[in-house]
Image (cartoon, rainbow, N blue to C red; front, side, top):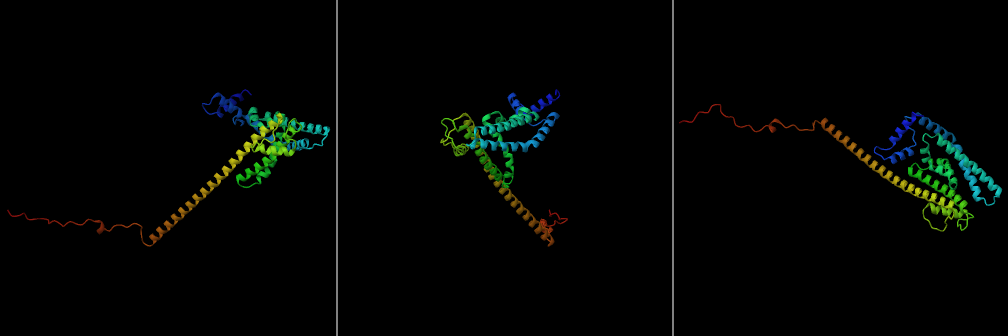
Length: 311
């Protein structure tokens, strides 16, 4: 254990750029959840964490689905007796305890415990805050991966499918949560599941008509979370559309460049063929000047001996 400390501190120093402040280095150390390759303990811990999550992924998804089903009956079935409500509440509490144990075990197995919690805020909120306990069923989104993978081949198509699925799921989930928080409260406007669905859609779209307003603390907490999700989804849709446009424009530009390259290659081939044809016909392609054309005109020859003029 003592030998591992210098390696961890050295790894933490490499996560922040040179010249960074102490606060930046501390934040980089807290948020860096990747194991240090030079630290065997962290590498083994990451392997154990991956193996545990792989073995328990299906079971946790099934528990999340079961929690959602129980919560739906708990909220929507108004004919349940107090005994039935107590049984449903007990079953949900048992599942919630399993979720807490799962998060605790994953945190212990993680190579960097605090960094793991920082990178899983939804899990922490879901097990720590009773008002957000229902959000733990977001694990069921993993089961919707088959729907996303069967979307369009375009990235925009896959993202659009994921957004539609997320909007429908979160609308239903937030409607249950706000109805459970608001129904029966003094001065509450949300009294039915239809009212809750309308409120969820309006809040997620950040429209805010104001016809339905949560009056309880739990209802307002759910509203804050839903508004954050709505803004995130709008940003995701905008980014997806921009990415699709840029990808298509870039693809067309690439196609145009490819066509120009093909035309240039065809021209080069034709020019080479013409040159070869000229050579075969006896044209060398360059004309050499003849000696008579290139030589300068000869000056008249001087006699070898000229008599001197008489005196």
